[in-house]
Length: 473
Image 1 (cartoon, helix red, strand yellow):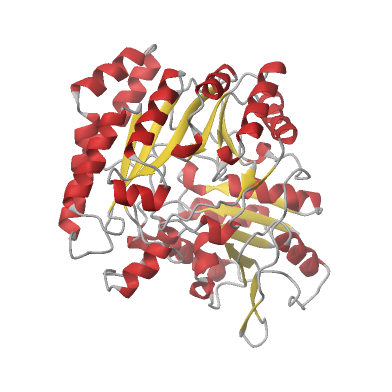
Image 2 (cartoon, one colour; image 1 turned 120 degrees about the vertical axis):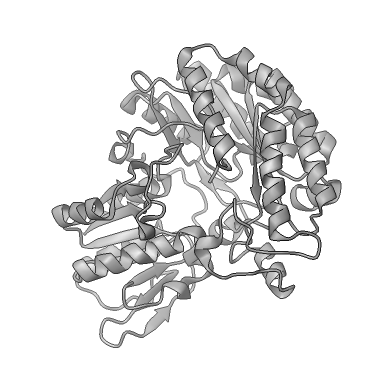
């Protein structure tokens, strides 16, 4: 079967589509396409988000390729845009089947139970999606054995739901990912400037699942509480595929817990050195996994250019609860990372459980004390399916269930300690206190080596001044 994966442009429902500051590849669709191609199906990806396509451009593309199915991945804040586009597709192409997966579909699949949607998938889709397409291709109408599938009966319109299946134990047998489906979309990394005439950026995945119990995150619910990955050899094979077959020079590894096995991380780095695979690459990590300076130096020699740390808070109580570390450990990890010559980016969240104005001050102070190369501050989003959502709902903190309002720059809750106006004030102040310090500006100027880098910093600074910038949104 022919399936089109569609990344929905932001604000398409209101017609206010504009290009994102950082264009990042829809790696989930690339990942699933590898499994679909292996099962002899025909996936295609249309990255309407990064390309800032209009509704008419999207509909014309669908008319031109005539797929059997269109697939969406759903984040909570995108729910309204996705449903808007789904209804336009249903009206114009009533024959095409429509399927939705992703984090919001995993937590609230019933939100998509309507006559415009045919299928919803919860949990991992690597096995269930190819199985569904094969069944449909063969004319089958019985789906009760397909794990995690929610489906609407074509005759009665009634919805049925199947339990999710077991997780794939490891990904060593994953086919090489078909990056050719999106590689020419002009993506750009968030951690450094890049000369698009000679350099190319791509994201990839080498493992899924996370044992951390962060109150604001639902990765462990969607992907499981155990990190499952490719081994070092298979990972380096993927990175070599990116570099040699597609000319990729910058790679972001988007695993939720890449550093859980430090021996594997070291083996990957050493293989990249031994095989002369020259990439500027990086990953996200928890603070407590970064304390070995010799490993950091090895990573830098292997081309590691950045590490993103989800610090979240500077308050010792909140930090201990969410990340199991202390402010001093944050300072040490960032210091060692920078000392090794690796760009350290820290993310902080304002408004987590127990937050006060005093604890926000502690967060800003820690961000300044630990001296990362960059930082971003966001307002906590109590996504459905998370512990934070459940707690805030029980305490009547939530002020809306309009999912399009669930953004990192928009408070959807008020507590006994913080109202909406205070949260917005501190979000703006945190960015300005961090980025407009003379010490930070001088440090960034010191690291600028080219006119292209200077222009990139000016562009980011402009957006920082007039908007609230979230690097990872």
